Amino acid sequence: MHPLRSYKRWLFVLLLAIPLGAPVAQGDYPSRALTITTPTAAGGGTDLVARIFAERLTGLLGQSIVIDNKSGAGGLIGNQAMQKERNDGYSLFVSANNNQLIVPLMFKDADFDPIDDYEPVAGLARVPYILAVHPSFPAGNLKEFLAEISNNPGKYQYVSAGVGTLNHLIPEMLSQRLNADLEHVPYKGIAAALSDVVSNRVPIVFGALPAISPQVESGRLKLLAVTSETRLPSLPSVPALNEEVPGLANEMWVALWAPAGTSDDIVSRLDAAVAEAKKDSGLQERISNAGMSVMEEDAQGLNQLQKDEFEVWKKLLAELDLIAR
Image 1 (cartoon, rainbow, N blue to C red):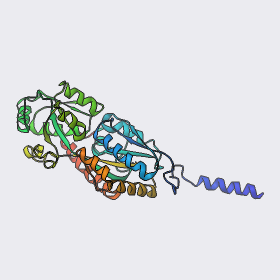
Image 2 (image 1 turned 120 degrees about the vertical axis):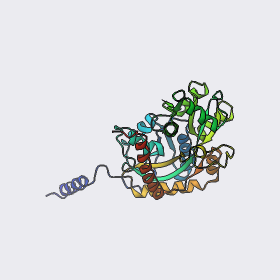
Image 3 (image 1 turned 90 degrees about the vertical axis):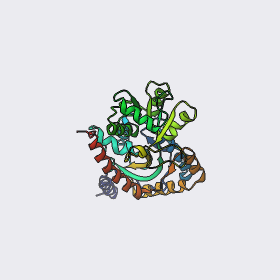
Image 4 (image 1 turned 60 degrees about the horizontal axis):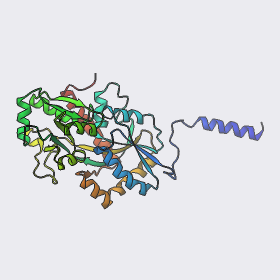
């Protein structure tokens, strides 16, 4: 056999042996622009965290980063879009715990597994949630609010950024605890939801502090409570919902993931870059000024956190009878 023909046959066999979906070696990673998809609309807490970190990571990685908002269905649309992305390290995902861990439990057609379909890269930020109402709502503080909705079951509505979001589930848990029969009015994103609360079409919102605080500061909404375990250092006079309704506490956290099968080298490179970004005083200040805090979790810590919290939400949603069947 001619040597050239023998070489071609050997090369053909070698190429067949390489899995089509295998990540390409990335010794010079990244060598081009990256895209970070977020399953939320612009203007919300997740979007803000993604943009703050993307700005710092652009310098650390030496490549531009594009933020792609694919919102809707409580994060389902963005998650489904990510299932079609390559695991080469150039398509990344910034999402919140509710979009990742709750949505697949509530939608039969979710078509993604939050644990198996992603490689955890790093935790980014913890985002406090607050309860706010239209100024005309007949309650001046948390105790009066709880009494009002308890004494008038079925009278009030609340907005959310979509089914399965924390601003859907926190008031749902509260409603069931108090037999308040609050009505859920979902929107495609928090910006549209807030617009209707400000205009008093719907009077109640539970949402991320960065998204709602401008409306509170301007007097267009009235702040009644935070949903963290205890009061926030930045809002010491605002009670925690947990003080009046023991056991009802929750917060949002935002993290960075890559598609499943992304190489360990790339995940380690990204994890290290995020760790370096967290040390930046400018980033810390922007996160703090928005009422958030930087997460400590690296790839390993995020992996454990998501697994633990996924089991917690399975139990809570089963109690609320919200598990998809």
